[in-house]
Length: 138
Image (cartoon, rainbow, N blue to C red; front, side, top):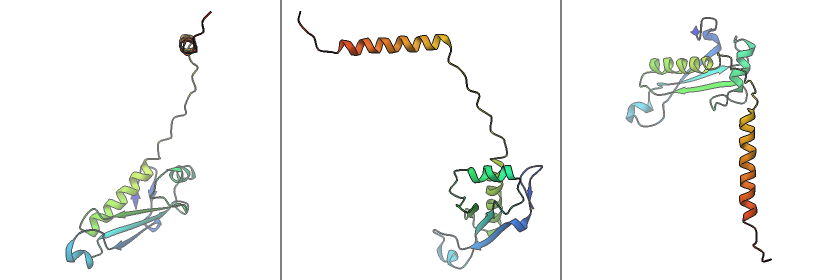
């Protein structure tokens, strides 16, 4: 059971973990030991609340496929168990990042003084630009 918050817990059956061979340097050992962990989590088929599902899917994260499946590859550590913990921690972090409801933005009006300053600045710039015109002799 993956505990994300006090209210959200994901059963182990919803998280698919598989051991794969790690990439990169590691000598002869890397060719025979599957120490990296491939985590797959289907957001739509999960027991997450609908609101949180939509927020997770709305994230602009490369780990979330177009089908709504979160794919995390953990290969930071040399042992399979540490990589498993790392993958689960990263999934927990991803889901926890959308738990807080974003604040609604309140539109504000510009103050009278700021409007006047903007118009004064515009007229000053306009005068500067008209002065750049051709000079004519009278």
